[in-house]
Image 1 (cartoon, one colour):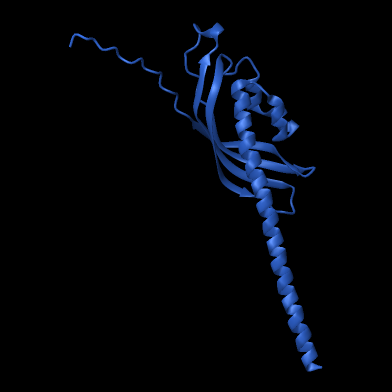
Image 2 (cartoon, rainbow, N blue to C red):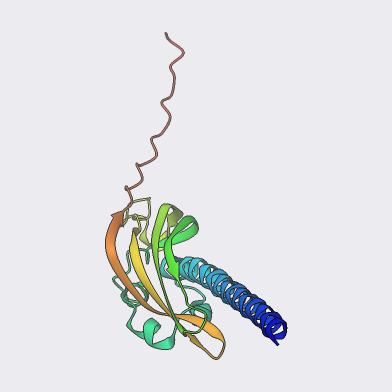
Length: 188
């Protein structure tokens, strides 16, 4: 009887250890899955947000990344589609968008996740629209980037950004006007 009890305890203890290891692996897998999905959603969503704010085109694409409540109250989108937009007089052709994910945490059993990102748009290329050439300078204004606390919620199996709080402002330097090359005289 003593040997049977030891054998059963040995098997039970190994089963407990095996179950704990499997639970940890499953938890790690779902944390990695959520983290990857959130990383892609945040980087692509913030890039699309900047693109819509600069070009005022294809705003319906933002619904893939942001909740409707967030988009209705987003000050960047409100300014972008108003007459006060700093980019309304420009035809933006290209921009550099840099997102740095500083911190991310998403428990596999929760439907809410949080992350901290830093967003920068170091360069914006574009030209003044023809009707405003005499009224506006030639270079588009710099983007106001910053550090953000992002809140995401999972609904219907998909993550959406529901909150974006700017904790620090990053002002990109205004691009220096392009200097015309000096013409050389042949009289030197």
